[in-house]
Structures are given as C-alpha cells and as structure tokens.
Length: 143
Image (cartoon, rainbow, N blue to C red; front, side):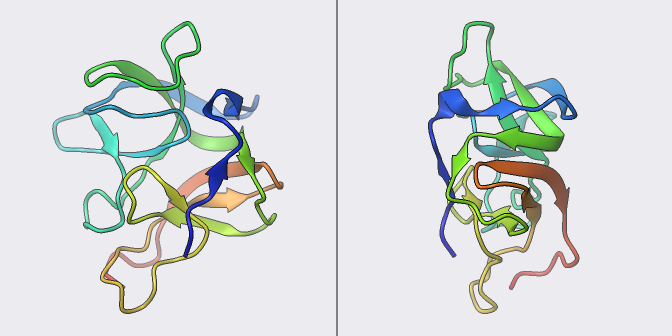
C-alpha cells in the first residue's frame, strides 16, 4: 500500500458534477487531503489507524478566496463530498482508493489484513490524474 501523489496542490480541481460544501477545519489541512467529520462538528485529517478517523467523508479542494493550498485551524475550507476531482498523477483508472494510515493521505490499496488499520474507500481513479470521490466501506472492523 502506497500513498498516491498530487501533481501539485494548486492543480486539484473539482469538476462540474462535484458536490462541494464549505466546512470548518479542526486543524491545518491542505488541498488534496481527505477529511472526516469529528463529533465537534469540524473536519479533521482522516487516518485509517483509528475507527472514527478512518471514516473519510471527502477531499479538500479549496481554501479561501485566493487559491491558498494550506489552511489554518478553524478556517473554512471547501470539501468535495461526491464527484470527480482532478490533480493527481500516475493513477490506474478503475483502481479503488482508500484512507491511508498517514493522516490526510489517500492510499492506492486497502490496508493489509494484519495491519490493524481500518478499511475505508474514499473513491476510485477515473483517469490517470482524477479521482471520483464516493466514500464507503463494506466492513468497519480493523484489518
């Protein structure tokens, strides 16, 4: 399992069909990172190492009005909850993508069966540089 790479955070662009909402970041987040909704009502970096934080809900696609790529805590950021987003490199179309054990990162494979990480799919690659955000899981148990 390896984390997928952004071409550059500035290249992350939601496409027309995407569902995007402004939300409050609970911590510093970057464009292209995945986030989960914590019980405080804020969005924090998703991390497959824990049950709650593994449940990624979307991808950060915008910060502020002037094209920033890094937020500050408590800042409003735009998150794509569903739909196509471009900006990655070397993806295999049709490949499922998962929450990584690295906070905020997207992995190219499910956690290994003995890893203790949680399986949460964030979507799939629809092209070599684009992902289709569509979060789900078929199991909530640690692998």
